[in-house]
Each structure stands twice: as structure tokens, then as C-alpha cells.
Image 1 (cartoon, rainbow, N blue to C red):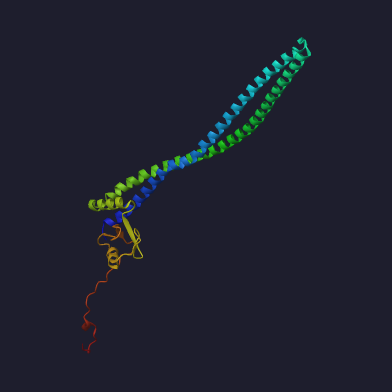
Image 2 (spheres, rainbow, N blue to C red; image 1 turned 135 degrees about the vertical axis):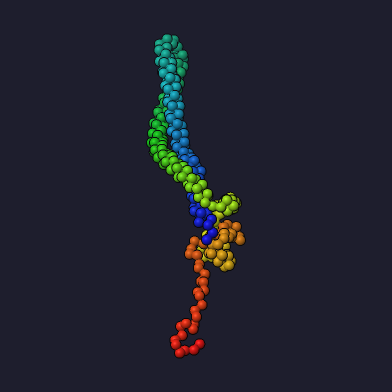
Length: 258
């Protein structure tokens, strides 16, 4: 068997696991972003409802100030009734008081509407706060899990890269360069196992003669289609060797002729 083949097979196992770990690590920020987006939306909703409550509260206070001013103005107008001399002036002043009272009623209605709106917004704020709490908890748990995964993957990667260097030292330099070149060009693996006469890399049927040569493992062969190095993960066939020719005369009994 070619002495490079077992080392290359083990090296490829390490390489594939290293590639898988790197891929998982690349995806961690995306996974964190996936749980961060709902968190940002929940925070924004909570802030918006809070701002809305504050805005309506300010609006109510403004109306309350207007109401106080209007009530003072109305009372002042009422106090002037006794000062009026003619009936015409008196009736005109009563009309002004009526208008002032109507304006006062309009302001009171606006204050009530503000109070109802504040109550609704406060309920919405409470719901948003509760939702935010649930999402923050889920985000914290997911971030802790991803941080733990990142640490685990980083530790395993460092160990595997050490094994990768050690394993590479057991492969002839020219063969290692060939392996790395194929791995880089194929963007995945350089070795392909033969399974049921098919290259596991490109899934195409291989010539029987090539399969036989790969099984003998005397040299490394490549797939004629995808150019990956082929190997066979089975028992190497043994060619029967002819035994020594038996002298038939030696087994003849005495008295027998050839």
C-alpha cells in the first residue's frame, strides 16, 4: 500500500472537521444577529410607547392649564354682570359667558380624551415591557450558549490544527502539495472514496481497470472526471501466487508407472 494514503485519509478527516468548525464560527454572528433583531425591535417599541405616554401627559397638562385660565376668565366675566347698566349689555355679556363655558367644556372633553389615551398607552407600555423582558431573557440565554459554543469550537480548532500539522509531517512533501492543490481547487475535499464503483466526490461511474488499480493501492490514482485522489476503504485483494510444482512421481505408489 502507498504509505502516503493512510496519512492523507486521516489528514482529510481533520481538514473536514476544521472546515466545519470554521463554518460554524462564521455563522455565530448571524445567529446572534437573528436574536438581536427582535430585541432591538422590542426595545424600540417600549421606548416609543413611553415617549407617547409622556407626550400625551404633557398635552393633558397643557389643557389643564388652559382650563384653569378659562375658568378664571369665566369667573371674572360673571363678576362683571352686576356692573352692567343696560339689558342689552347684560344679554351680550351672558352670551360671552355661555361661549366661555362652551370653550371650557371643550377643554374638559379634550382632557378626558387625553386621560383615556394615557390609560391605553400605559397598558401598551406594560405589555411592551413584559415582551421586552421575555425577549431579553431569550437573548441572554442564546448569547451565553453561543459564547460557550465559540469557546468550545475555538479550543477544538486549536487542537485539530495541531494534529493537522503533525499529520502533514507524515506525508511526502510533493504528495502533500498535490493534496492541498486539489483541496483548494475543489473547495472541499481532495480524496474521494470509491463506493460501488462510483467516485464519492463527483458521483460518476469509474472504469473497472482504474478501480482494480485503486484497490491494489500500489500508487495514488485520481478520478478522471473530478481529479480527486481515489481510495478504497476495503480489504486489499490478494493475488493468488502459484505454489511449487508437485513432482507427481513422488506420490506414485511402488509398482505404478507414470
